[in-house]
Image (cartoon, rainbow, N blue to C red; front, side, top):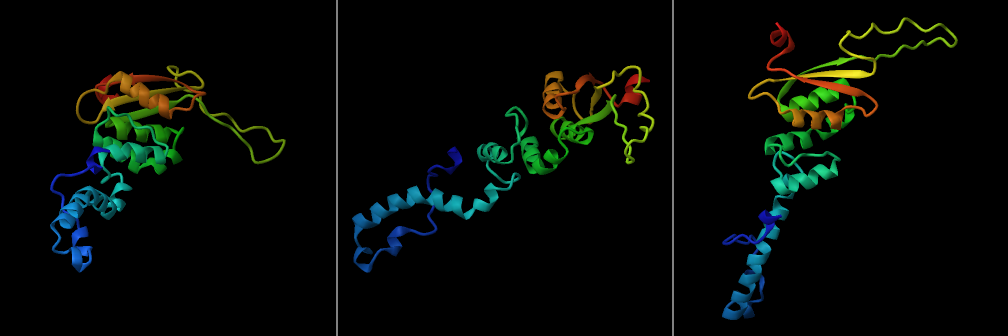
Length: 196
């Protein structure tokens, strides 16, 4: 928390020397002594005056942002650019709401990697509202390239270079439900263009 330490030359908004009784107003030692305390207390006042900004991910100091991320149970990689870490912490509630879903995984990949995403799910569910009734027909069979219970995740760059495979896998592991197996394909562009 180095940016909340003593700042050379930072003036105190409430100098102690001015608050002393009149007897000490002309006392050189008392004024110098309290000026030293002002130097120590000025960063404390500056921090307290701007305290609401510390709880806004877009304004919080970089070192405080990691601590703020722990408050909202978000893991941020120190290798991510500061803007990405701020965005992930700022959208933590939304990302938690959609965690483990296709939408949540796609949003996290878009947010962290700036990547386009296509997720093809091989699973499905059938159910009936009538007790004892025959189950409705199951979901359509997954494409031949995907096994049951497997998720195919295609990722391509929206801007910039092709995403790094390790970074993609790291984000997918954090957002994909543990009971599903997944396969990741990193493409140079959107699937229609990349395959055609």
